[in-house]
Amino acid sequence: QVQLVESGGRLVVPGGSLTLSCAASGFPTNEAIMRWSRQVPGKGREWVATSDSDNEYAESVKGRFIIWRDDRKSMFYLTMNRLAPEDTAIYYCGSTYAGSDFWGQGTQVTVSS
Image (cartoon, rainbow, N blue to C red; front, top):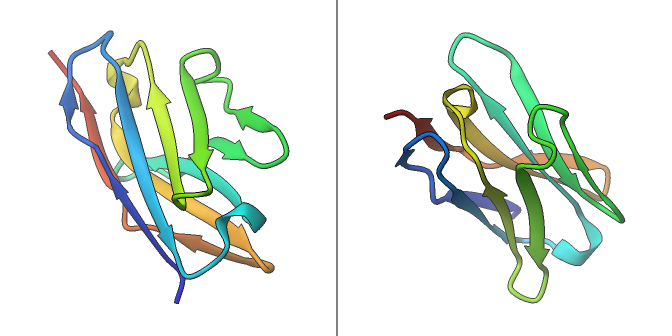
């Protein structure tokens, strides 16, 4: 059974940094595409970053966020730097494996002074 569990979300001040974690199980992570998305209540989900053969980023986070992974531990991460209030959202870890998409339950990140 595929499972993705995010953690690490919390309140952080503007300009601060935060690393989110995603624990994956039930599939070989080295064969999967991993991604992070975010959603503000009342708005659509926004793609943030993808880890595949290359890493790709949304323009809104490029140069500030880093997606990385440790397939030996089946862990995925999103390091966020220079956080701004507009980064406040629920962050979701997702994967594509064997043609199917999976998502975690999300972790709340709030950027506020």
